[in-house]
Amino acid sequence: MQSICEDKMCAGCMACVDACPKDAIAVLERLEYYTPSIDQSKCIDCGRCTAVCQQCNPPQGSKPSKWLQGWDSNSESRGTSSSGGLAAAIIRGFISAEGVVCSCCFRDGQFGFEFSSSIADAVKYKGSKYVKSNPIGSYARIKKLLVEGKEVLFVGLPCQVASLKNFVGNKLLSNLYTVDLICHGTPSPAILRQFLSENGIDMNQLESIEFRSKGSFQLRENERTIDLPGVLDGYTVAFLAGLDYTENCYHCRYASIERVSDVTLGDSWGTNLTEEMRRGVSLVLIQNQKGQRLIDLAGAELMTVDIETAIKNNGQLRSPSEKPSARARFFEDLSCGRSITDAVRRSLPKRYFKQSLKRLLIRIGLLKRGGGVRN
Image (tube, rainbow, N blue to C red; front, side, top):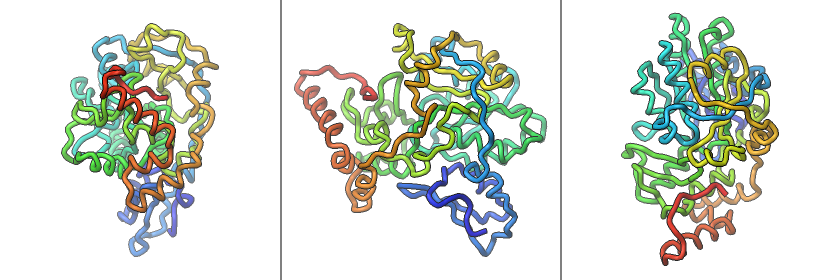
């Protein structure tokens, strides 16, 4: 086997690594893109890597049968969630029904996937992650649990859900439940690691890291903001502008109204529930009967949502994020040794100036401190 997916189109889902019986595959993490590397001395040309690759074999998606919006009925859980807390409610409900959950969390400097069958333990999954996560090892363990007859819930990005479905195969899908998150695109963790390092922070030493709280977008480490409260830091500016995603994200086949999961979750931006928005309102798309069961188990507060408004305010239900013209300069600056913040300044001068002005006004007391907003 000479290659797996098309050049620079690797999503970093890591399914090929789990699938290889000879440990011949490593996925190399570049700043601009991921690429699988095959040790030809070990490869036996079995084809398992291409069989699970969601770029080579994308599962068929389906349009949502129901469009809803709402929030976790547990007010404490909702209050500590990035949005309306629907993921937390689904996870609690599934564990209560004696299922096993696999989702992303931050531990030991890594955004990896962990398993849980304890409601008390499920809090570790909370929070948006604006960076690529690594499910390596999860696919094989999920398949083993399914073979044992366990019901498993996987919560991840659409590309990860697609690869998981390829990995476990059609015969085991009946006990697999999947939730995908509306994804704008994700940067390599190497960019986050570099940005934190430039601000004197060792990612390996962090106990926690947050990217947003409700409508407030700002990078926080151990509950401390990187920049002044109310000012978007360089990492967040780059992310919200779509400047630093890996190359495959701008060609994502899952940025569509047709979803590959049982339930799709996002933010109900533009909702008519304006009084509830500050506390978080989630968008919920139900694709099938398994998705309906997940929602029933969640016991959440749900109501109808205007479909046109939901699509208008969640562009990735129509198409992938558009690649900014400044992206090439951004990565060229990084390759020349410039800092993340300096590269953002040169690539997005207007956005950078706006945040610099806010920082100045806050420091001299002409503007109140607060959370950064996504515009």
